[in-house]
Image (cartoon, rainbow, N blue to C red; front, side, top):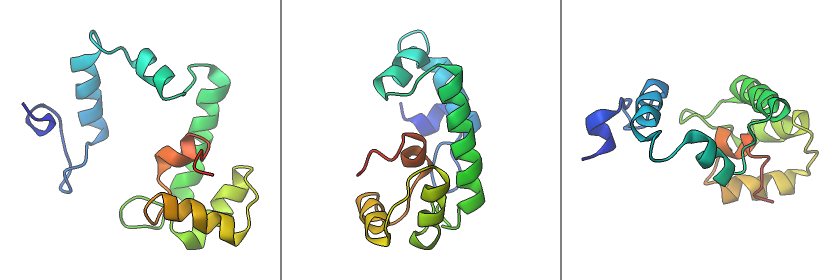
Length: 114
C-alpha cells in the first residue's frame, strides 16, 4: 500500500495538510505524534509551539520559491528576523546544504544546518 492510496496528495505528489491529518490518524496508535515530535527534537511546550507559529508566519511572508521555499535573495532577511544574523556567505552555505532554498522544516527546526 502506498501513501497516495490512502492520503491526499497534491498535483506534485506532495502530501497535503488534510492528507497529513489522515496519515496521522492512521498511524497514531502505533506511532504517537508526541513520540515523533520528540524524536525530531520538536517540543510540545507552549513557548516552542508559539515560536514555530511565528517562524511559519514569517516564512510564508518571505516564501518566493515556486516549490514553497525561500530563495537566496530573501533568505538572509528571513534569517535575520528569526535572530540569525549571518553574512551572505553563511546564508549561501545554509542554502547549498538545503538544495537551493530554505524549507519551512529547516526554518522551524532552528536551522541546524550550520
